[in-house]
Length: 102
Image (cartoon, rainbow, N blue to C red; front, side):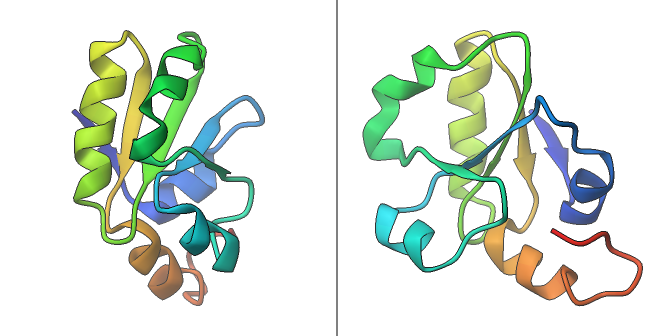
């Protein structure tokens, strides 16, 4: 499984990348990483509609559930990455001066 830390993701993300917030809708609506789309695990059928020719980055609250999500995407033929530490890590890192803005 591919993994990437949040600062590295923010530094290298491209316009065609897909960022998935897999948390429940109410958490997504409260706060998320800019540019993320919400596809919770409960809506798994949407995973099979994702393009296979783009990089897909997935995060949850702490990075554990998204690892399983990434495995499902990889099994479906997608190029997927787990954002280490999830949204919590994003909150910690977004205030560091050497980490790109999210």
